[in-house]
Length: 178
Image (cartoon, rainbow, N blue to C red; front, side, top):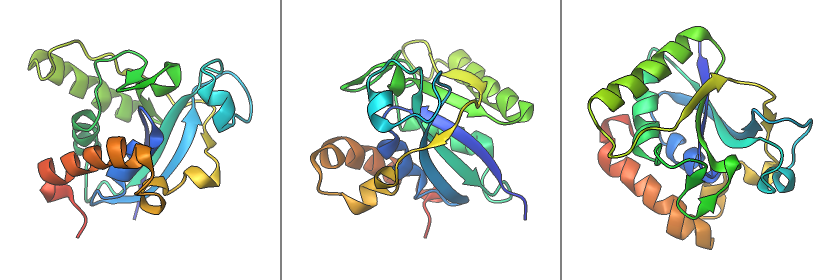
């Protein structure tokens, strides 16, 4: 069985992780940082907005169960790809929307999905999601992994993450793990 991976930045990685942990065909997720300028980034460094890193989720998936295109549909439906360097109240380059690929086939799929959504005018404003090769990936600290599942009552989780999870559960029932 061959798995593939894609790395997505859609604001705070806790939100992206909480959604994709529920997706049928996703076999592993890991919160991390990518495409920055420094070595060995820490959460504090990335939050400063000075490192160039983006908070991301590395997603390993089984393409026999879910396609990259379906993963990207879920991604675009559960974050705002039209705000530059911002998701809700999270503002800064570390919260930018991005698709970070490891092979050119994934880049082509990502660019095609963005083109299709643009032509269909799915969003009122232009999509600003960057599509770049994955560079300088680093795992986030262990306390960031599985964050929503272990901290559901934490304020940010209750007010920001939970509504995104609810939106996924309502809009993508066919992709919900049983």
